[in-house]
Length: 133
Picture (cartoon, rainbow, N blue to C red):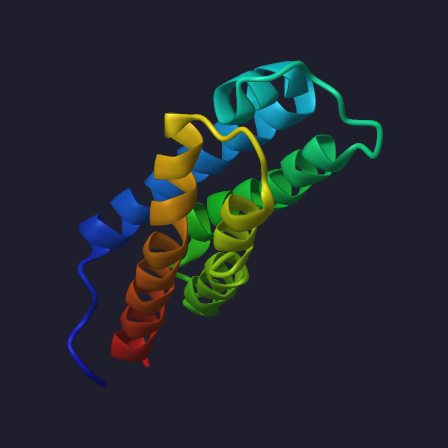
């Protein structure tokens, strides 16, 4: 068995991800107009329901990450599950950034740092799991 991962650091990372995704999902599901204002600075028009769909995806992220936060020390495979969730996002935000119109400075910042951040989070969680195994 390798050395153990830094439990406090992993808990803080998971807590950060839980908070991040509950905030994102709540805004998209409950106030999609606020999402459009923050990200695009335009009037809310979402006839396809894409913003609420994003909120539902982030709600699922929140649920899995919360389960991992509470249970990962007993069920270490949850770290790999969350890593996979984070890694699914490594291309989507740059694609959104490239194709979306009327992005605010907040959107530019968030969409540009998100993919490398998710990649880093995924690697950290996989390495933590490997230390356990």
